[in-house]
Image 1 (cartoon, rainbow, N blue to C red):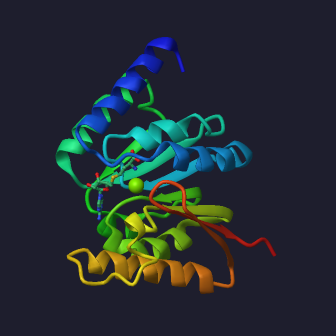
Image 2 (image 1 turned 90 degrees about the vertical axis):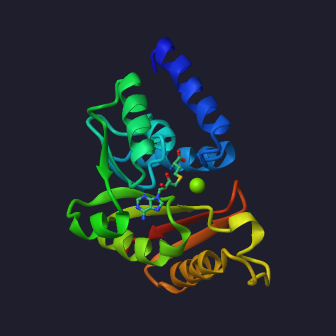
Length: 200
Ligand code: SAH
Ligand code: MG
């Protein structure tokens, strides 16, 4: 990163925090970064761009000519993300699919080395099925906010977020029971599920 980009990067982060945009937490990013350093992914798929903060962070670990496809449905956030990506001179690296991931994901055909799930919690099982379809043989899936403020592991279910909690539990059950996956659930940030396809 050039030094003016570094300054702009800090501004993106501070503005997102001030505006209560749920950007990836530092400790979660640290864990993912460790994996990405080893993997050196060529293609990353992100579900939930917000203002582009996490995609910008991940771009640092891409292989040469690597690329990130990221999906966002909120128009204002898309505008902000595009502006941020341009300021960081990453227009050739980060591509935004504008619209609902539920509609966009089934149209995708490329394979990805890493999928980062960070959007509507009620859709995590659907996102998982799509991520598995789009994953390279040695690919890895990260799912953020998987423990959702502790609700997921408690007996808590009388809440307006109970659909989210039910679907996050379903996600955990599916990745844990899937024999092709090796999964770890970490208590970093808001909870991070890491699922790697087993190599035969
Ligand atoms: N990954 C970002 C934060 C994403 S916040 C970062 O760490 O910097 C979650 C985003 O997902 C929100 O901006 C929300 O608008 C978007 N989102 C939620 N459900 C979605 C869906 N079904 N399709 C597309 N975007 C969605
Ligand atoms: Mg998140």
